[in-house]
Length: 306
Image 1 (cartoon, rainbow, N blue to C red):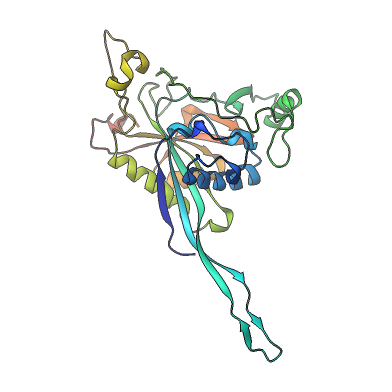
Image 2 (image 1 turned 90 degrees about the vertical axis):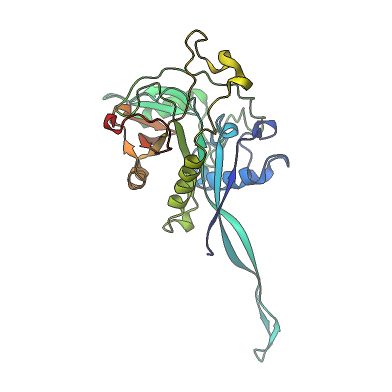
């Protein structure tokens, strides 16, 4: 494997052509190739490895997010050498070097949906039950599948009612006050890292670290990128009180909804578990909320609050 390199795709109107549940290499030509490369990695990791339904892997945040993809230059033999009976080379071996996507991550701008409920079990972004002492996560999922169709082994729902459909046009999200947690006051705007994935054969080479650092470095250089424009949107669209306008502004707070098995990785990168957010499950996978405070050289909340 050659030295990996990282490419960035800024927010784009993917919704104009992306088809739900359809493999990355069968998408319409107007879908950006870099995004299809990101989906190639996500399909391999989340759909094939972890069993996430294919039609659930693309969501409404993809079109408004920044996406990074890591590539590696791979040399592959396309034609073996041919030798005669005397072991003389008749036709030499042929190989080609190709850049292939091996990892991806995205940054989702504010505003966000409310923090997940502690003990919540989510499917396709929707709360389908609460885990308690009498009900397990598998039982909640099994009940949901019985009512809505059980996913196939390849990740597509048996009913498949949304497979092949165009992605619905996403509308601006309102700026809301959320419940406060240990590391978030429920009001401060934050960006969210997500969909971090590395192809299995390339794990152990710090690809995930390269991706996270690339995203954080970009955020540090572009702290105002996601701040809303009053000129373009107007106060009403932003959802602020015209009498007492407080314009949402990102001040360096970064969140991640981390799968349980990779909490340690995020901790090494400076993130802290937000115990006040609790534990929840997405597509059957246990998650924890984590936050990082970046120094963006803008007005920050005092670190003593952490």
